[in-house]
Image: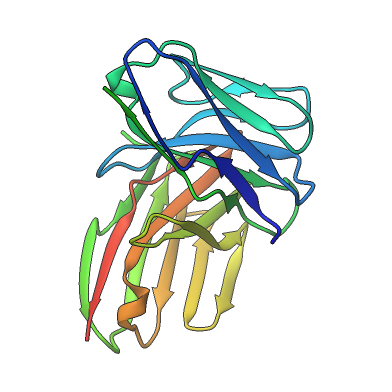
Length: 113
Length: 106
């Protein structure tokens, strides 16, 4: 099925460990996004990529890095995980200028202990 | 102050009622989105608006650019409409409201 695929779905990390969240879309969208959602709070933008080869900081970029590997893939890396990064992470994509909205991945539930 | 404000935060309705969720924003935008987040966590896009009104089934979304305000209406609400409804605006980068939690009781 066409859409946004995120891996992994669940992850537990120890403080200080690193990991990369993977995201891939097969809709040929130009823009891709990473969000975090904390309990009782709205989605907050971590980083986004308006096109292949470009990335920009969002509202809460500290502690994260991203790579727009190609048009399909946009990865999020935690270099040294902290308990404050415990959250649900969503990747999304959209084609800017089109009448269509966002397509979201199913989310990654990350716990840092 | 959040650039996107939604009201109400929580809404409980009886099945069949007409529902209105409001979204106000304080920045110039190119588009406004309404999203639905199911109790299981998945997020789906309902509407993208830049002007006027859109309708899909029992859902209607309107936007008033001059007043910087949008509304999402649900007609003949049903328990399966219970979800969090999220307003988001594109103003350079995307900004999301905190969501409105809707519970529809049978």
